[in-house]
Length: 171
Ligand SMILES: O=C(O)CCC(=O)C(=O)O
Ligand SMILES: [Fe+2]
Image 1 (cartoon, rainbow, N blue to C red):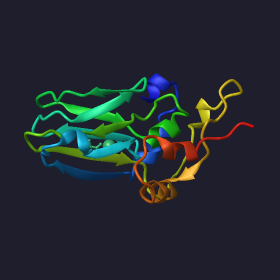
Image 2: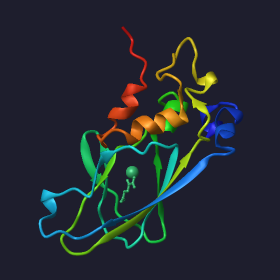
Image 3: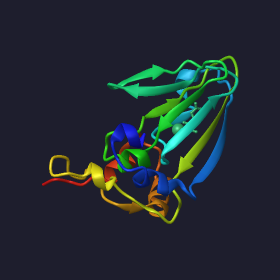
């Protein structure tokens, strides 16, 4: 990733030396009226990278692309890798976090396991210094990882609205 971005490895890698991994298992029971409910509200993940397994290969995960919801069909033994908000901030918006949601079906339960990877909690994250140039100014403010999570978990999941709070406003 640092090669692709043409930045020093230390500008990304050091943040993950004592980084965190958190895991969530999601169980979505079937519902006779699936169009009336949502499994997981539209959101982007807070951390840097998420590795997601659609355990029993039931459809339900959708990503938002150009304003449309696109289903991500489960592939056997394959993981889905999602970019989270913190990686969007650290790459100054070059890698964009993906908005996604989970829907419910009427026939069978759906199970997924997500592993969220995050910089160490006491780090201050912001756009990598060499991605901020006179031609491409910083798009996001710096914030501590702890404060980022505090803000993220004290709000409702609502698309990508939280990362906008970190955006530098140009008058
Ligand atoms: O169930 C899924 O496929 C998505 C889960 C998810 O987005 C999450 O746990 O953050
Ligand atoms: Fe998610």
